[in-house]
Length: 145
Ligand code: DHK
Image (tube, rainbow, N blue to C red; front, side, top):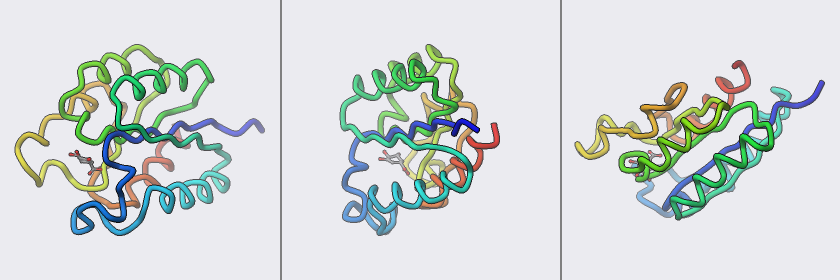
């Protein structure tokens, strides 16, 4: 069976995971999360393409790339662009692959400006608040689509 290709796109400041506000985002690095995803992906019959950028346009380009490469789904933690980026909202709408919004923290329990999600307006669904485990739960959901 051909493995399902899952893109995992990470936005600004997520390259600082492990050092960045560990009380909110936990102690695992993005590399740690990538390693756990890889392991789980294998068991689920998926392959993972994981990326991180601090630049909005790069994330849009990768959404298009995911579509062009025939991705089964995209997991997207757009960091702060979640709350501001109409370019990402349009980018999600511009592809047919389902996008699952992922967050380590639960933005709804935090500052008011985090309560709005542009990404969430176009996402298939959202998994938030489970720390690094949010990514694994999102992968399970993506594999089951
Ligand atoms: C990550 C960020 O960088 C924040 O800007 C979001 C999200 C929440 C997270 O919890 O993964 O507000």
